[in-house]
Amino acid sequence: MPSQPKYLTGDEAAIREFIDKFDIFLLDCDGVLWSGDHVYDGIPETIQMLQSRGKRTIFVTNNSTKSRDEYLKKLTTLGIPSGGVEDIFGSAYSSAVYISRILKLPPGKNKVFVLGEAGIEKELQSEGVAFIGGTDPAFRRDITQEDFKGIADGSLLDPEVGVVLAGLDFHFNYLKMAHGLHYLKRGALFLATNTDSTLPMHHGFFLGAGSAMAPLVNASGQRPLELGKPSQAMMDAVEGKFHLDRSRTCMIGDRLNTDIKFGVDGKLGGTLHVLTGVDNKEAWQKEDAVAVPSFYADKLSDLKLVA
Ligand SMILES: O=C(O)[C@H](O)[C@H](O)COP(=O)(O)O
Ligand SMILES: [Mg+2]
Image 1 (cartoon, rainbow, N blue to C red):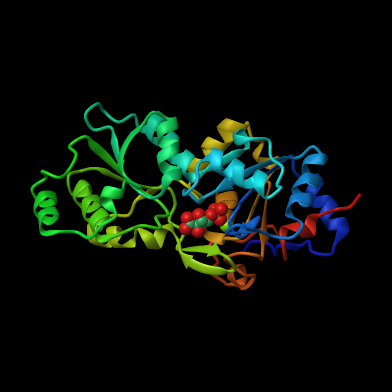
Image 2 (cartoon, rainbow, N blue to C red; image 1 turned 30 degrees about the horizontal axis):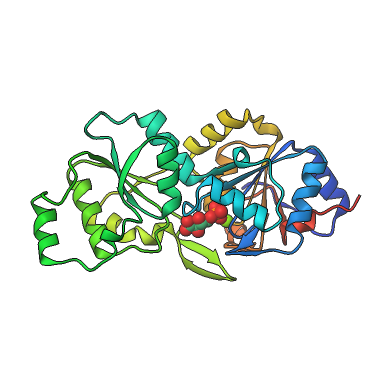
């Protein structure tokens, strides 16, 4: 059984020791910095404080609805200082890089059928990967008898599709799932930006990426290869891009089976669980907890040292 996580809230000496222990902080976003468009109190000042102490802050989110450029806009709008787009590493970017630089799809089978929002499309575009589906309004309608016929006989399918990439999709419907299913039946690879079951939003919980793609997982009998947290393919990509010294790096997150597991499996120097998002303390006090953090705090802004 891993050792008991160290509680930081209100313990200035422990907070100083914690901050001094690391050079790089990998920061989750939803449930840690903000809930939807509402930034939690004290977050800009806390990030500023870490940066003013020479710490690097890298934003590592599973939310694939936005591209890195759009996240930079959101961070800036919410007053959260960052080192620019280069310090943002989202699951949409992670997936686009995996497809373009690792998979290297053969010509004639190098298109992606997207089940997700514009963030995925923009990152695929930035990696020069062709795609269909996604936010295309042609897919935002009810299925018809012609669709059933054309999908079943393949006349409505694009033969160049080699991958089905699923993420958080606020517009999933039967027609898109039907196309996705038949591309998988024809041998396309099934990838996911992430499979979080829920999304913390406006102080409530909504369907996450994993729940949005569940009909396709059920109908196909296939589980997608995940390219977001806790995938170690993403950790290797983050390590490569930022030249991480894992022992001097800490992952900060609100969710055990993504953020904390990402840091623990990645053998980082530490993980900090904050209680402002998906999981509470009880989640890692359980015997069969999926991952146990090395530190925890009520909220990220509890780290805010004045001097
Ligand atoms: O369903 C989702 O995609 C997740 O809830 C969301 O992406 C989580 O984002 P993160 O906490 O990793 O920033
Ligand atoms: Mg989160």
